[in-house]
Amino acid sequence: MNAHLAAVMQLLIALAFVSIPIVRHRFGPAATTAAEAELSRQGIRPAVLAENGLRFDASGHETWAPVSVAAIMAAVAALNFAGHGWGGTLTWIFQALVVLGNALILYSNLTAVSAVRTAFRRKGDPELARVDVPAFLKAAENAFPGWVRIQQNIRHAIVFGGSALAIVAVSL
View 1: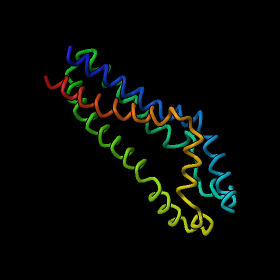
View 2: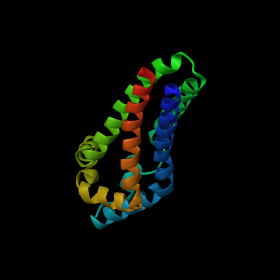
View 3: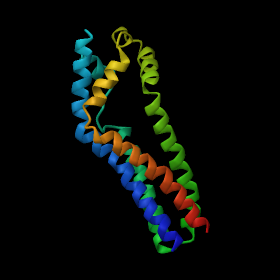
View 4: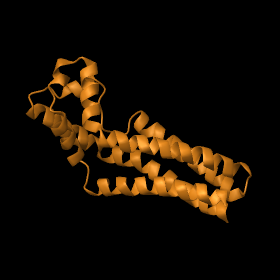
């Protein structure tokens, strides 16, 4: 029964991670358009985003990373549902990694302005160096519906709380 609780938490975590590329796929193009409009307002060519590979959609790691986490969580959940002996061990390993990964996601969200400024400087593009980064990121963020911030907070709660419950469940 405890392994089943862990498995349910792992499936919820998998769904939470899959929500990332779904939301970015749906609203990322609008965020890109808003960010480009903000760049135009700042007197910077909007094409500088594409030229430097900057996107707000679900391309690249924005899809493969969360989908990979979701797949691993589903696989470990299947082991826990089946009562397989490896389920508990893999729960400890992967839940710890998921907590660390989600902490990095949260940290990157909280430090986005300074991280983007640093990334823009590293690119060496004089146009990017002139970007008012807080206004740029705010424009992109405002293109996502208001419920996305709530969804992000719920996702973090599910990932952190669900991981803790899963570890406790397989430890009892």
